[in-house]
Length: 118
Length: 350
Image (cartoon, rainbow over all chains, first blue to last red; front, side, top):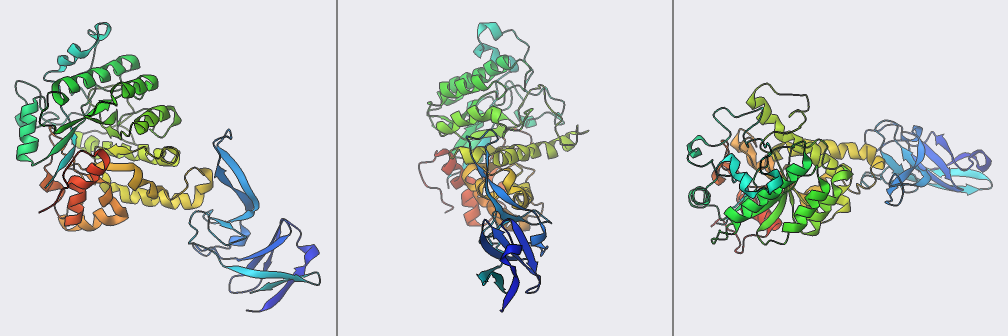
């Protein structure tokens, strides 16, 4: 493990992701509403480049809504580009089966610079 | 050894006997005979030795002799057929009510041995009528389930049926799905259309239960109704494993589309679903039966059902061939007793 410079914090505004050449498959560093998170670019299912899929929210059951669906956790869910598995970027947990996590990494900011420990 | 037979079809002594139980406005209406179907078993749907003065399965004493004496059964769940999805759904509901009144009059109330239990037949195409029929009879101590036909023009997970399932669940009554008698306005019996022969029909018609089951899970019916239980009485438990694999795999990818499904689809089965055995079920090699029954925990779902007096009726020994003692215990008695609570004495294999 080593602490790697990613970019200046201005270059990673909320709602964006930087894919860093780190580890075996790369690591996605995300800014979600001002907080930084990092997950492996490797889906726990079949190893697809997870960070290249959509970043979105997910759904919860809400019987009060006309379609009975409430949209939640917007910007916090990585969707695998291959088989559409959903992962919470803040924890690495797979939403359907929390046992199938993806790896998460430490991110910190020092002197306006974002660092990833991977 | 306690044995519960969870699928028995009692019949009227003759087809027109139902008219005695219909009210005046419906007494003379055209009603299909119970065996009036496009796909008839060669030689008749029922055991040929049972056609006589009355229809097969129409005499309580003869049935008691065959089930209780010959098969060693202790309790039998009677699930009579009605006469198909008749286009006049109000008439169909009266037919269901007539069948229920007849079941009480001829079978359940005269039965001093206390071994027969009954089914409240309802017509799902008449939701209000079906709920009213459940409310009318759910309090009868010998009525232990609600019965609906496998033949439906919409899968049973659709919200239009929800008031019926809600009423059944509120009374603690499982809903049994079984291929109906008679003839009505039905879809083709297989996913791909009409079969050509009776074997083509009989082998694949029970698979329609999986469409009902999948929609009940995916459309959230079990999630919304914790006490709702379904029994698929035509068999097919052996095909459940790959079906659940498919649903679970799909759920990993598309969970967000159905957020009311809050666990793997297969995790609903133990609390909500049972299958009756049938003669067509299971590996043809008995040596594989034990392992296959344990795949995806099917041993907790299967109940012995004879289908008496159907031509393919099976005795308990045929159904448990190749199974281990724990599996036999579940299939012959425990699973059905958990559902219906009929046996007072614990079963044992001693």
